Length: 336
Ligand code: DCP
Ligand code: MG
Ligand code: MN
Image (cartoon, rainbow, N blue to C red):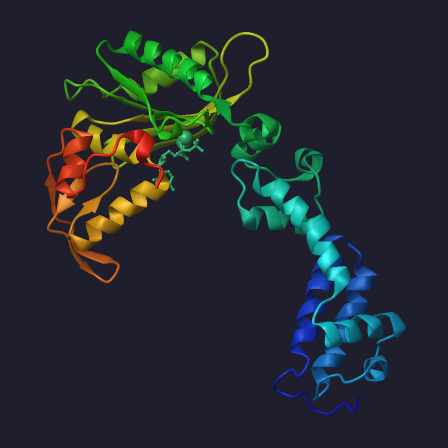
């Protein structure tokens, strides 16, 4: 390949260098610095080449490109693929990223960063990675937290929380929502909503209930504790029923004021897909719905709300759906 003195503006071999860049990343992540360097040199030479590579010999003639790299370049030029890269992606990287993104508290960015740092196993994470509190819990309880529980177990967890809440504040309402309320055979976690029908006794409930559950040894790990909008409080954690052969299970507890109960019930019962459908419906009607309230007379400009509207009183789930002009749907029919 005749190399021009100035680097051309466009890269005629972009489809090849893109794949080689991926290889560099792979080799860097496995700390194979020599191979990474070799590929980097080939990329540099290809960028300077003003036309597409037309033969193996042309590839081989590039500065710093030996027979093996020429094979790779020619393979991509002919097939558009590089088997070695596909292997990399299908085997190691993708497998490890899957393992890492399943750690509670880790998203794709974190998983990738861990991979780039050379970590490949949960043991690597445990011993070498800089983990947040949540990720430590996620790694330690990895198997348990990925496992879905039978709904019978969700019912037992609901009973413990209900009994504890009742002991803290008589007359409290406690219901497991989420997939459990939708009648699913198994549940990823238990989502319990707490409120009090007198309209004010839900205040102070949150801290006390959590503390009681901790004192009992029922709650084993905290993940997130948030106060939303000063009205609703949400706890995300891990619990374990007493006795042998019990797994750690994810538990969410949400405390809401009674006036927000119906909307919170709709929201936390889900499914997430059903909630999206309701919100979509709202948009068309100048309304809005979230876990706090249903509002009407909402003014939007594009995605932005210019006027947040006024609250529609919704004492029951039925009233939420009636206000939206849809027939009531029992929880078992809210998967879509
Ligand atoms: N939710 C939502 N949008 C989200 C997440 C949650 O509307 N992005 C609502 C609907 C969900 C409910 O909160 O049904 C509870 O959330 P979960 O993540 O616990 O989901 P599910 O209980 O439905 O399923 P799983 O069995 O996996 O817990
Ligand atoms: Mg759930
Ligand atoms: Mn949940």
